[in-house]
Amino acid sequence: MKQKRNSRYLASLFLIVMAIGFIITIPFQENIIGRLLQGAFEAGVVGGLADWFAVTALFRHPLGIPIPHTALLPNNRKRMTEAATNLVENNWLSKESIQSKIAQVRITDKLLQELEKNLDSKIVSKGISSFAKKIVTQIDVDKLASMLEKEVKSRVHAFDVKTLLELVVDKILVGQYDEKTFDYLLVEVEKWISKQSTRDQLGSLAVQLIDNADVDGFVKFAIKSFRNLINEETLGNIIYKLVTKGVDDLRNSDSKNRAVLLGKARTFLEGLKENQQVISEINHWKISFLQKWDGKKQIVNILKEIQDKLIVFIEDDQLDLYIYPFLTKLLEELKADQTKIDQIEQWIHKQVMGLVEKNHSKIGSLVRENLDKLDNEKLVELVETNVGKDLQWIRVNGAVCGFIIGLVLTIIKVLI
Image: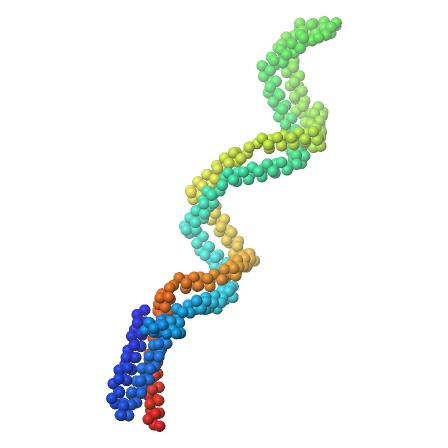
């Protein structure tokens, strides 16, 4: 602004000098030097005034008089705005030039360098923790629980019971869980029969059965004779010995009775695979369970518990113990995979090019919008501030050139 004022003062000073020189040399027209100087000063005044008029007419009406074709900038503001918009949008910042510059930049390499440099910084760590916590806290647990309940019910409902039954049976047989279950039952029976209370109960039950036996004749006489010889304790001990002997026999891997029982059990299990009644019953139970089961509440409680634990985990800065090694390894693997880097680079360039293609017109809109915000006075001031100095020098040059041309023309006139 100061330089513009100085150049304006200088231009005005030159015009004043020319005018004063013209007036002073009027009385000396008879003298050849005076005549030459007067012609030169006269042309300098004309040149200075003409250029002052031209420069002033660019921005405003000279002397406030609305002379036609003056105040060119305010009167042609729309055309100037469109020209500036077109210049910026289609020449200085054209789509082709922007895309060409972007294509020369290896964005992925720069991103990887910055990531590697700042990966262990507190800012990155805090940012990751803050981002992770925000994601966890913004999870809609109720909505997610509803989705999970629906998905679980859908998957369970669609699951083939026959396939499940075949898997269970095959697992039991391959893992010999039938035999292990049989051995477990034998152990439990042995424990149970070893109790004195069990023997007493069995002896008492046996006596009751004998006493209540509905038989006649010789059998009845034989039973009563046998009954007089034994009591509850004796019967209990007899049953205990029989059961213990049977358990010992069944526990022996070479026992025929064991082989028969296990064979029947395995045959039964194999038969379950094709037992439509069992399959139908399980299906019915499955459907009934799914209809009655309100899993949302249970899923919500589980999800809230997980959510709370995750928040505490993040707030205690424990996330860094897992995320930093993971990111470091991921970064190293990515840097070693040039093919993957090129793919990422192509993807980034494609996205950026797409953004440029889609939003390039906004550059012109932005230029137009900012120019439209300026009123005429501010627009004139903006242009004068940036090019006013050069325009004032046009006035200086006009006065000087006019002086020289006037001097030359006057010399020619004198010589002629």
